[in-house]
Length: 423
Ligand code: SAJ
Image (cartoon, rainbow, N blue to C red):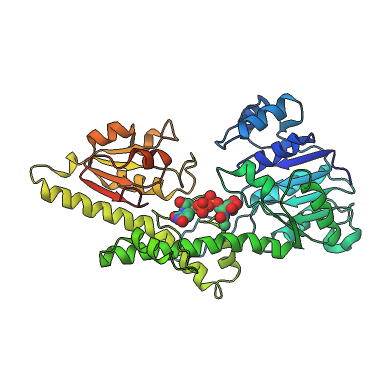
């Protein structure tokens, strides 16, 4: 089956690099995006996100005419859906977050009218188990004139698969090509078509399974990392109580040939690891005890850091009785959800800084080399490393950016280092 035109629905952190990758292999790519501003930026050959090498790829693809962004789906031979799959806001403490598939639903309903016999539809968004079958149902409901794998098996007009993305922000362009791909077709023929599509640019192995296992595999990868980080975060709290340096402890324990403990931090952020484990918990709430507990441990860590800041303020005032709380300046180093990126989504560092700005009566500064501007409503002043070093009484290191590793610790008496780089 030749894939002459490929459509990618959702031009975000995953959709845009994927679209650009197909275009770089001289495929005609139509990117569909509901945000007109994003469409305009891409059609001008620019990008709206920070990701190394992506600007060059998109610029070249647009100028050579292989990539075009639109707001309404057009006919294509393959459709890749890469829209967000968040969870619904939680209203009560202790409630299990439930997946919100409304973007997948609207994307499915938007492409349904332009589908034709022989097309392939792939769900790339990280999804709860059963989402691909649900997507196929939405497509079938909208197009009773076509047949789908859930009712017509290998002979269906439309092929449907789940092929989750597994790329690491900051390394997307390389990992899209090199990583192995899980191919979860609803039938064997669906998988064959999906392999043919990804082989256009994927150099990693395409490993075939069914759609439900593919969904669970992606969730499992991120839940496994979440559980491992929760162990490290719990250790950091235990060690603080026992007055042990957790970084040294982990270095020592990791010398064991079969131990590999991850690094503690201010909490777990981003739109993946902090979200995806809930998709497992919401499908099996009684069974997924460890996964659920890990989420709670990681969610608790930012609150714990804020409590440590409160203690640091009290300590500072005790040693400087001539000052009052309004005089104490706190500098937060790093706001993004992890090192060397500009992404503030679900960032524990950002929520810690915000929280400090809310309760603290004195000035709160932030040093974030990857951001130029902060919303005025935040009540946090974005300053340079040097300005923060001269003004602040308490430094809170929240992200292990390369710049902070190179600069070393600022000359500030009280330093709370949540990443262990200024020890
Ligand atoms: N973190 C720690 N300690 C560590 C490692 C990470 O506290 O030792 C924190 C980070 O600071 C960050 C969060 O965890 O706040 C998540 O960062 P990450 O680098 O572990 O992962 P993401 O969210 O950038 O990307 C993950 C990746 N999944 C896995 O490594 C299993 C990536 O491959 C996925 O494609 C991505 O989620 C996704 O889209 O699902």
